Length: 102
Image 1 (cartoon, rainbow, N blue to C red):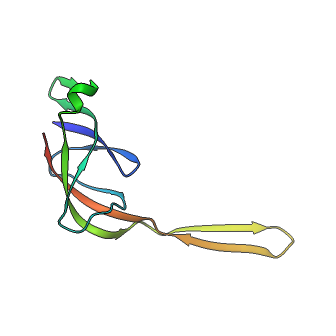
Image 2 (image 1 turned 180 degrees about the horizontal axis):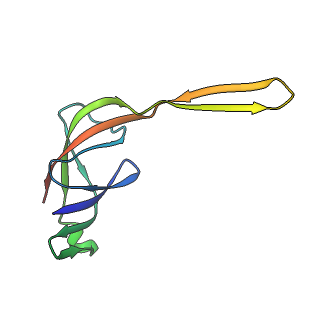
Image 3 (image 1 turned 90 degrees about the vertical axis):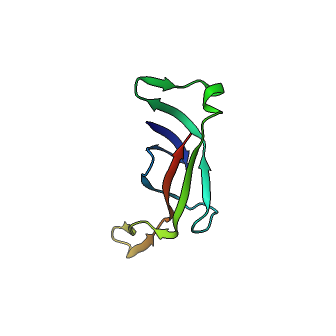
């Protein structure tokens, strides 16, 4: 059984026991969070109807609330003018473990 959930602005395919990275959530380590469901597949049974999906919930436990993504370096350069700029960015992430699809 797996589900497609909306988590942190993205959609993720999850099963029970999966550990996923999502954009920073407003939750502390050890908290339980719930994600809205877009699709549920249980063997041959596919659930898409909004009325049926309203009954389904995906619960997850926050494993780490202070994770960071990889460093991304940004460079701008203009030829013959001496203009050069370097910047960097690291996305703040939350690591969650899927505990239940019910």
